[in-house]
Image 1: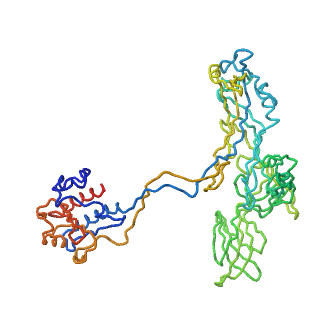
Image 2 (image 1 turned 45 degrees about the horizontal axis):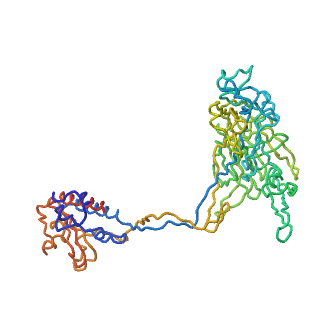
Image 3 (image 1 turned 135 degrees about the vertical axis):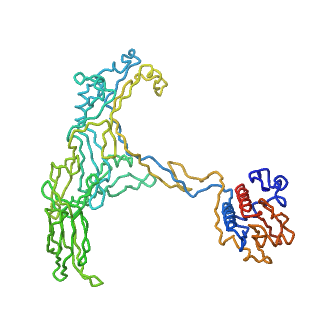
Length: 598
């Protein structure tokens, strides 16, 4: 084959003809094929070519040219804004329960290994000089409590916090040899946490209040005018004056909080509320208990409609608009049928509360159909204090009366139904709690002295620290978009800059680039041409041979690429051909390799 491997073109286009033996000097540069990112050439295929392989070759060449259809420019990166993020995760402090220090002034360290640690450095409620039992008692007197905002809600208004607490906690060493429970001394190297039944509590307060807050900011420093700020807080807890005072840098006495009224007085019959994310539609509230079910909402039934709800099939048999009644047939999951008349706004429990229907309206549709709207509730259940509302959690339900005299659920306290003994305790999917012991040997401690403000070594170094770690399950980030001129932590954004980069813009041709030789007017050629096929297959190639412009011996060619400049006025021609379809195919492959190098 006369066409050499195109990869050799790395030596430079000017040397192609002389080095590789291409017909008629070098192959054309990139601008022959593409100009300003758009095609600058047409591919011509013989209309009466004896082989469809020439068409395939032309398609391959067109595909290779398509990879060059783009523009590129060097631009300076710039932006109208930047986005910054900040870790705002609510991360409670860990509970340090044991600390042992040694003095560098009063004598050498006495505990040089874990087994020598004394047993009376547990937190006793005022200092780290008690026993393990002292720590357990002190913890129970001041247990860990925390709040996660806006986790549950009433009728999709999520303003109910999770106020959880662990009232009692114990350590259970994972290796019993580390700790003799009859002679508790050193903190265990590793331990599980044990929380007795009922000690892990979650309070959900469904009385949501509106509080007005006024903060006295003193007098304006320039004009001496009294200044203040007022706002409202909607929450299940009264706002803490100390927290607000700290935010505004004032004294708590400068914060005035007034109860304005209830947003929700509790959960009443007909409300849907959530408990630990589980949804309940309330059917009825009684002292310390309530009935609930799955609310399917108001459903439109045309006469004859049959609809399925958790296995119960409801069919609209008859609808009376004048009397606001509907006759329905209900089939249980077991196949038992029951015919019942529904009267407007009256609940009808069926199959022991398995399904509850309430007709809300009847009317004639615009198409003349009789329509009934029926509220559907399935799986009616009753829950009372002492029952498990959520699996693993015993509910204590506090009920009361709202201003309308209706029974409502005021709040629910959940507690763990069984003892918890885990290496890592999951706190409602929000936090993980586990035991951790960190120790330093004497050599390690000596090598890591802390230095005080005077440049002297501190008198005491900690050689053992046991803690209960409270760690968020996921980090939370707050983002902020900043523009030029914005302030950020005392700084003003003056400019937003970036490094220079090459911007590449893909281009899409608006018209086809492959044509038949019979479609081409040789007296009005308006682009460069790629001719696929020799003089037998392609009439334009034959014309150039007749004119003496093409000089390749195509009858014997094993595949050639012949470049002819100014073949049609200012337009050039590249012939891709050979003695037969296989030779033409080889030449097309070599052109594709050449184009890939461009």
